[in-house]
Length: 215
Image (cartoon, rainbow, N blue to C red; front, side, top):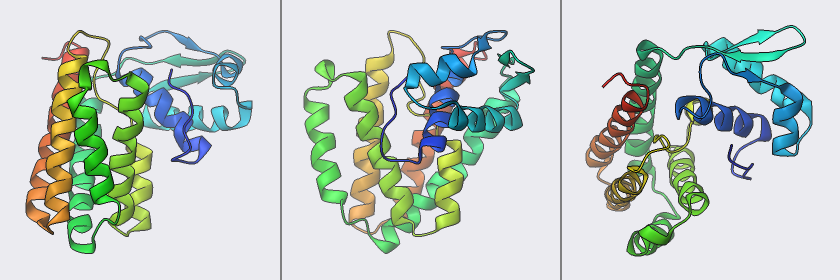
């Protein structure tokens, strides 16, 4: 699992880390998640992990077991479809709103993305994922709607690619899409920002369907 980062509240981060692990195939159906084990792995107390487990159970991803932690449930195509449809709807709206309202750190993020793209083959997963999160959270914040931002935080699952040789290809395509989204936001083109963000999320959706063998 990924380490905790500072861009989100701990409870939200833990839920996102576990959701990513589940959707990337790191955990399989029937695996047992230990409350204590996850807490120790992440170097945190059991309380926020317990809250994350409760959220993931409500989403239908795990089943809490008395004194046994949680059991990973099968992830069906309908769950994946619903998840990414919501991300596409909400994140495309956030991108369009960011183009209207402005994104102060847009130029700085574009420079970081272009630099990363130039040396992409040597970029670590940790560096890529940190910048990926920074781009998305900056757009959510710029949309200037607290409820929208919280919904998007609750759906976050990190880079949508499993443990495959295609990871570098995903990093390249995703970074190019991030650049296109921010360039549209920079010039105030909300419709282009919306369109490219939708394409970005749809490609991630396609990746996850392949991870689970639905395509």
